[in-house]
Amino acid sequence: MLDYAARHHPDLPRHLSVQGSATTHAALRYYRDRFGIARAVLPRVLSIQQVERLCEQDIVPIEVFAFGSLCIMVEGRCQLSSYVTGASPNRHGVCSPAKFVRWEEGPGGQRSVRLNDRLIDRFEPDEPAGYPTVCKGRYDVGGEVFHALEEPTSLNTLELLPRLKAAGVIALKIEGRQRGQAYVTSVTRTCGPPSTGSRPTRRLQPDPQWLRELSRHAEGHQTTLGPYHRSWH
Image 1 (cartoon, rainbow, N blue to C red):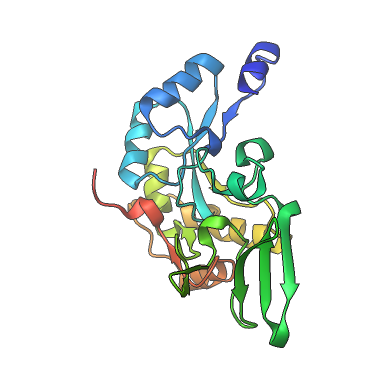
Image 2 (cartoon, rainbow, N blue to C red):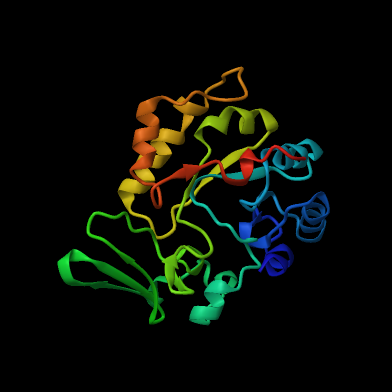
């Protein structure tokens, strides 16, 4: 698609999706020189130090994820959804396409969710239920049912927004695909200019009200800085 757009629509701004899985200087230079990209969205597996080093090189403007589902795989290369549904996230634009998702009501208000007829999880009536993905399902492993790959967790970078801004990140990506209007409104309002303002500090002390607002839209029971918090270089 990038190749076609570069050849036939050279004046069209071209953004590299997170599915392009560009995590290095070399990858960003390749996409810039080969397809003339105007921006790149970085995968959610990079540490804050890696993001800062990529911004320092000033190869292309950088966009990063600020809030949403925490992807534990290497985006653009994960095959779990393809294995279960036969539909590649790269070709369909989403992990676990909605047409394969089925919710079922059980006794006492229990809910089950299936992906292409495979049972992914069961939730109690008062238990938060995130969007079903293979990596965050609960499975019977050796007679024990648990999150065998990853417990549902939301990425929340609110306290790092000043540092990302100082690094030169030009845009924040808030996961909105297959989300409701209330989610998009609330998260963009909370993560917008009031919280990113021109503060001199590298770390923000979030207002408790902001955190409460975002926690209403978190996937699962917890939020995290994800790979951003890694201290190693």
